[in-house]
Image 1 (cartoon, rainbow, N blue to C red):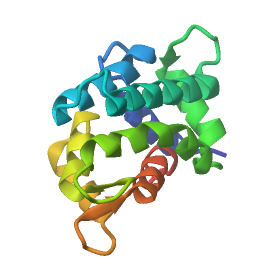
Image 2 (spheres, rainbow, N blue to C red):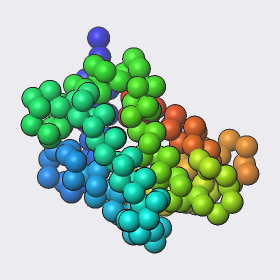
Image 3 (cartoon, one colour):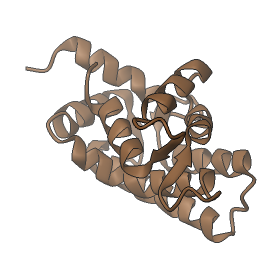
Image 4 (cartoon, one colour):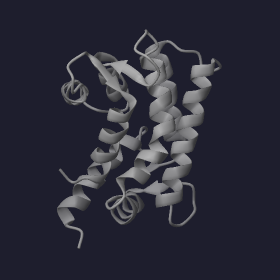
Length: 172
């Protein structure tokens, strides 16, 4: 049995995706997030990294819609999000990680092109990404720092993807 506390926590995470605050998640929310990240890191939309981010955003949207848009109207309501998250993700956070990975990979490529290797970014840049995606400043810094397990100031893609999936699928 899924607790109502779990459902409340998942519902609160809905706002992270509802970028424009209109009460539902749709393709435009994912495009808006990509556009905001491109602006933050000064990357052109038509560049290879810009196109990769938009493709990642579209893949993420398609995955979310496939899991949660029960009525097929190309909008995910809060109720659909909670139902989709609870029924499909709680027992399989790897599935959520899989649909988020292309977007997160591309976001890290925007944030971390300065010699940290593919799929890595500095703690500060990861915090910037989180802020742009709607996480409060202090929480973004704390979350990014917590992902740097070895203390070298660099966060690897697998750490980000795992943490992202846990945030949306684990009640704590």
